[in-house]
Image (cartoon, rainbow, N blue to C red; front, side, top):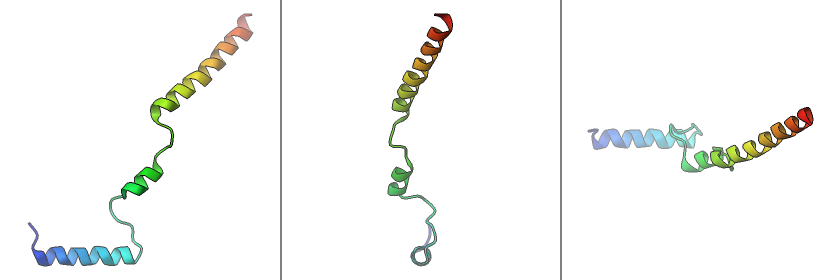
Length: 65
């Protein structure tokens, strides 16, 4: 377990790095949410199924009818 002195030094170094604009090691929750897609994977899958399924059925209709 680090001593109080070591913790204080690490906190000072971290605060100094933040003031200088260096990026933190772990992304914040806001950054993670900003990087996420607004459409969930399930919704995207359903949309792609409908679009590509429609294209396949239309091509089959054009070819065989």
